Image 1 (cartoon, helix red, strand yellow):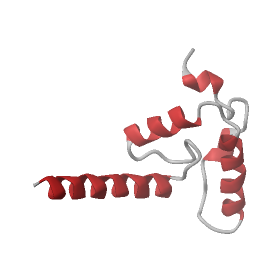
Image 2 (cartoon, helix red, strand yellow; image 1 turned 90 degrees about the horizontal axis):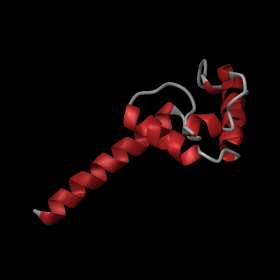
Image 3 (tube, rainbow, N blue to C red; image 1 turned 180 degrees about the vertical axis):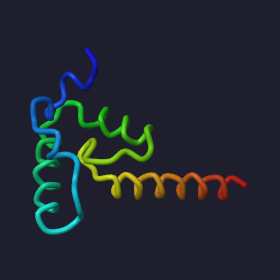
Length: 87
């Protein structure tokens, strides 16, 4: 069985996870979407997929696109620092 078939968001209106804007009602929408992710048995697989895919819109693995971008940047910096320490 594919991880998506076990996702908590199956059967939930997909519009909940694809945001329009970044303030006001959208902040409430983000919280609602993340609450669904918080109950999901495959949240890690979902986040890993989104991170591998790169720029993916919407809430995936309990994170926004901006949060995933920040995670990638932190990972890139840590990798650079590790190379610098070794060198």
